[in-house]
Image (cartoon, rainbow, N blue to C red; front, side):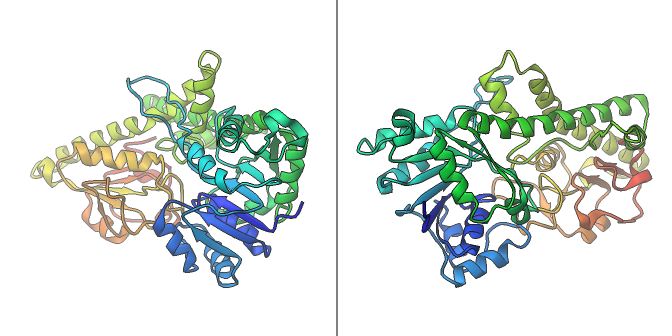
Length: 431
């Protein structure tokens, strides 16, 4: 099957690198996104996100005419859907978050009018089990003149598969090429067509399974990671209670040849690890006990960090009786969900900074070297340079271990370090 034109629906942190990768192999790529700013930026040969090496790929692809962005789908031979899968609003506190498939449904309805016999549709969005089959039903309802694999099997007009992205932000360009891909076709012919498409640039192995197992594979990977992080985060809380340095403890425990404990932090963020476990819990609430508990541990860690900051404020005021609470300035170092990226999605660091700004009558400063401005819904946090924060702040809260923060030595007594980067300085407040 020859894929002369490839359409990528959703030009975010996964869709744009994927589109650029196909274009770099001299394939005609049409990128589709509802965000006009993103479309205009890409058509100028620029990027609207931070990802190493992506700017050069996009610039070359656009300049050479292989990549073009638009807000409306156009005919193509293959369609890759890489749109968000957020949660539905929670009515009652304590309810289990449930996935919202409206963006997948909207993408399916948008491409349906331009489909033709022989087209391949791949859902790359991280999805709850059964989402690919549901997408196939939406497409079939919209195009009754075409046959689909859920009803016509191998002889269907349209091929449909699920292929979850498995890349690490900050390394997306390299990992798109090198990582193995899980290919979950609704039929074998669907899988084979998907493999042929991905082999355009993928050097890793393309492993075939069914769509449900492919969906569950991505959820399992991130849930496993979430459980491991929850163990480290819970360990840090236990060690704080017992007056033990958790960083030293983990270093010692990891000397065992079969132990590899992760490092604790202020919580878990991003569009995958903080989200995907809920997809499993929502489908099987009675069975997913460990996964559910890990989510609750990691979701509670930001509140624990805020409590640590409250202790630091009280200690600062006790040491400086001439100061009022309104005169205390707190600097939050790092607002992204992980080091050295600009992604604020589901960021526990940003959540913590916002909670501090809400409860603290003094100034709350934000230091995020990868972001030039904060979202409009983020209030009462002043985004400033690290050197200014060091001079102005009374309490320093390290939330993300960006490279700019490592090796910083400054004369500060009141430090809360959630990542163990500033060493002995932080032991008074976070072990």
